[in-house]
Image (cartoon, rainbow, N blue to C red; front, side):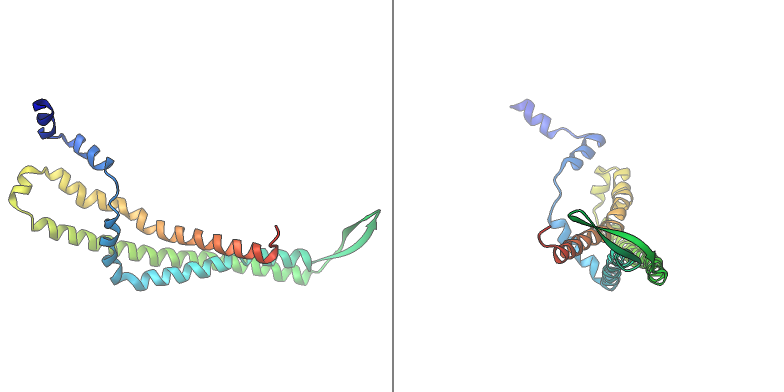
Length: 200
């Protein structure tokens, strides 16, 4: 019993402390504590959301242009073969094909433009959130007692202020736009497929 108490009271090494922190479950309340940081950048976030919606809309224009090229750009002649009918391509409507190609080229250009704008606005919002988080954390550290700095190594403090916040950068910059875009594409693709062929 005494040995167990001594084991619990022993001072953990730096590596043991880092492993203990790494094995802790994510506190769900942390998300709600980060929400106030979104308020100053809400216009950037809303603009990035609008850019993603427009971007996904352009993505789903591609099948339309391909459909037009196949259905109307190619001229078919139906020939009856035994009990089946076979369509043979007898000509090409170059005006429709040219219009479809121009539409595809414009769609790709628009995708690049709106993808860049989405990354710009979401990245700007994320960088501002991280900077504000650094300022808040630095202010908090300045208010800690001298005893805290006596018992805590400076390397761990620097690691929390610098590297741990840097670890949030890809999560805030790349994560939300990609998750939102994936969900939006899933919903739109499912809706279009159900509209085209509910049975399939």
